[in-house]
Image 1 (cartoon, rainbow, N blue to C red):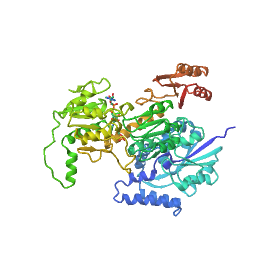
Image 2: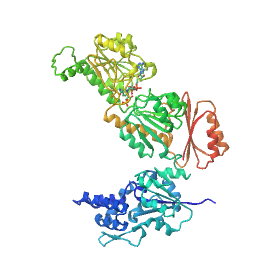
Image 3: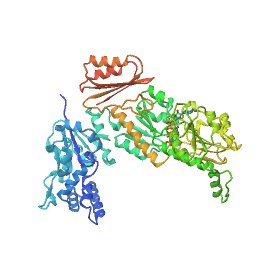
Image 4: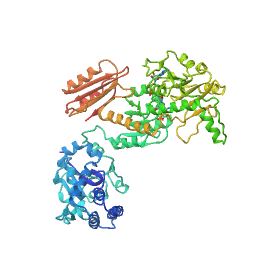
Length: 630
Ligand SMILES: NC(=O)C1=CN([C@@H]2O[C@H](COP(=O)(O)OP(=O)(O)OC[C@H]3O[C@@H](n4cnc5c(N)ncnc54)[C@H](O)[C@@H]3O)[C@@H](O)[C@H]2O)C=CC1
Ligand SMILES: O=C(O)C(=O)COP(=O)(O)O
């Protein structure tokens, strides 16, 4: 015989993210000149109640008195609370509805606002236990039902005891009074709910710390909506990802760790073992050695454009999807390039340095306008093409070279050979991607091909330019200047020193890889990349992935979604369908896309399935990874 499980759930800071009486204070004391003092007093009284220096009844009487609220303000409170239901409760609405018989809400707050919030999630009104307000004729709150045990000390255990519930009783809450239900012997387990607040004194008493409702459902094998609790998805964000990215990942319910620096290969190889989602920028090398240990890794987010730092092939072989932000910092790089063209042609770096030494050197010698000069863009991708348009508008004569056939924008001139571009232009700017083949693309020979007195800008990747050869070209005066933002070896963080052969050279602007480092770009990136990863985890959508076949999927409706990633070998699709047919499973929708290496099959099936089907699908030869969405 299976024992029924009854869930007793706290309201404030558990079902909702907030303490309702704090919010009520914000509303009812809005026009009160002493609002701040009174709100603080309410908080202090709450604390005194929790510490036991004030009885619970006294604390309730005092708080209701200070709040001085009325019925219409309770209605306002309900509107606010509706938006503040805890994320994991919102996600698991289906569970709450389907198990309504066995779910109880217990609160030292008031039914007047608890009931409308929880019943919207399918919870039965008769299963809500909370205090009850009393109103005067004018709608003013004049007190509460003092006979309700929840208005007194020890009210929660007493209320649960009186219910004489059968089966196992599990209490979910963030407060000491929730723990007391278990301590009094009327409940079997206490889950400290830490999604909104983590009180160590409470967590230390818990049978289990639950960062979300998903976790509790997972442990009890009752998870409906998600195959895996989000709180068990460990996200590691490196290299100072913008706080919005961190917040979005946390809001989704993931367990997020943030490190401001990049990690070395050894450090990352160790750390990656427990990581499900890795977020990096341009510095962290995600190598084969790192990936050998990455057995839980589902996705990598490059919070930048370039993905040359990631071993994309190995990621593919291990079924790890990689996403980047292909457009979010394009404009920032372009603006810096424009500024640098002007600064180089006016020798600003040296002039500014002299001024800082107290030297005034007013002269036009070696300074020219950019108007009418020839700009040579190598790599006419998103950045190169946008630079082309802006530069032309500033009067530059634009030429470009790309290994792919690219449409000329505006009056730009396409040049078919790199050599011709190099010896035609007054300033050369590099915007190629960081693929291995581009190592030393601009070497000694090609630097020589550049016009005497011309300038070089590198905002692409450090390894694209032969740095010692560039040093020679600058110190010999063959080049009149350079602006370099990226280096073959860059410090891991702001505490490490910067070393380069280029330090101290004339008219040489050196910047610490900041082409994409603007507030706008970083914020845009931090919104874009988590969005892609969350969508991939929740729906299987790979649209915009750098290394996975791109599929944009419809929303999952009343079906389970099977996600099968396999080596691109003949016959796998047939095997999947044969297994589904053998188990008489009805396919609602199916989507397949392959690339040279892997196949990505999504199958939406009717709700009924057996664990055997899952086993069979997982054991198809060539399977890299299998995942199921509920
Ligand atoms: N300094 C910084 O902070 C930043 C640097 N970047 C770098 O800029 C690169 C370019 O970015 P996007 O324009 O968005 O990339 P993209 O992929 O749109 O454009 C790259 C272009 O270079 C071309 N290309 C590659 N190798 C070439 C070669 N050897 N010769 C000629 N053309 C070649 C490609 O065909 C492509 O058209 C990124 O991959 C990244 O490495 C990007 C953002 C910020
Ligand atoms: O977007 C890119 O590829 C960049 O090079 C910018 O890198 P970052 O995020 O500043 O380390």
